[in-house]
Image 1 (cartoon, rainbow, N blue to C red):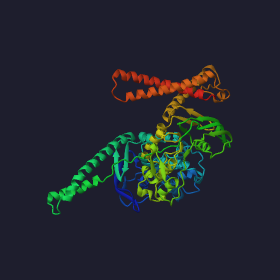
Image 2: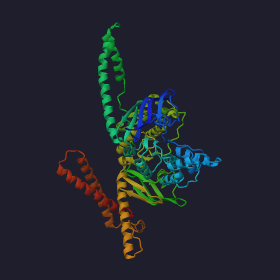
Image 3: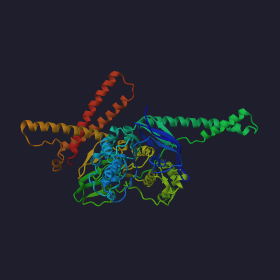
Image 4: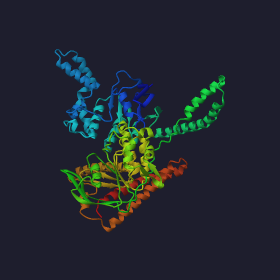
Length: 634
């Protein structure tokens, strides 16, 4: 039997006349890994603050198991100025830190009362290695300057310090609010692996759907102030949520049909009614409640008309940019094609956001030329977000951009109608910006970008703070967007849905083009890294047996390739390899679709499975050759 760790009963929280959640109840037991899902403005972060005791509540109860050690990562952590990174890890009290302080106080007390018992407890809690463990986790999170002051840290660095602070204490239960925000992709994968191996119970808010799928085994959804629980991961939740919504919509339609009949009966019935009539009257009012519910059809409609875009987009010719010893671009050249959807990935600090600012003319170059087509109309969604006048009303923010928004198919929407498509109902539109949640502000920002009818979208971390519902429809919109798209994002699911290929920023101006989405890139990179490890072992063995001292590097040489241009034969091979990759990808997708139908005979299943394996091997080989040829200038 699972031990209950947290029980929430009848919890209600409001701010003035805004009710975030009302009478919600749920529990979290030992070993459960729960993902909390709700749309922006539903009070996810506020709920976690209430559970952590930071925020009060109107009614209901929050009860934890006695002596439960709980670690809480806030969405936007705050530390007092003056603390170093290492001091910040000792700032918030946990059981181990409390024990260390008791031990230090004991040593300062004459006679050291209770020292033996404290030594046993220190040994049992492994408190002697607390600082070493803190440094290990900080290093894993790419924080190596332990003496840096917290006020000098970026938002992403501060989030990583706070995450280390939570993990160091090794609590029984972790409550995490958007733990992947501001983490680059390798760190997200590190955290995913860490939490998967951890024995800690987990309650988490995140928009990262791969993270939810791989880490969580239960989903709790808050929808229309009601809690729904799903015993499975994110994929299971999607399936069951759709079934729930369809069943609810069917019930509302049926209730509406019956309501018309019962309403006519209520109008005809005399005031003096018998017992059966009173029973039917009570049933009528219950039916009325169901009939007046809104059918769930809250879809963010993003079928905005994009401006015409010509054949010439932009051409980057030998762009170079440095900041001291740090190289961002090193004679980078690229020709952007029409309707291209490009993803940019790389570790923090490799220059992804700076590159976007170069394209937008917000960052000067050291050398090189950027030629932008006359019809290009940029729409820029920045990582920092738009700084709204918080005293303005939401509708006024939209009307400052346009009173009427042209849509696809020649339709037009007023600013108010457009906002409703973005899940801003009339009452929310006439509310002030300062009353919006962080996610709602980001959604409003996205709305203002698309209202300008761009034909070239540049999106820098668009998934931060957006709810999953908005992300799903944004993905649908971007796939059908009649223009160009550049996306910088740590959301692997989002990248896989949107991009045709990747620019991989490896740092110091090393930028590689990869012909595929992020998952395909990771699979390819894992294969290459594995082959390098095998080659390294073979090279070591060869040197030992033959007494050779030179190191063999089997990777294509970037330096050698830059010193010459592609031959005619290599250019022809490059085009053939691209066509072959596209053909193999198409065949792979067809086979995978056939395998998922469940209708194949046993011999067909075997044949297609064997072919799929061969295709994957051939794709790896072709992609490796494509990368080798792509490094040689035309």
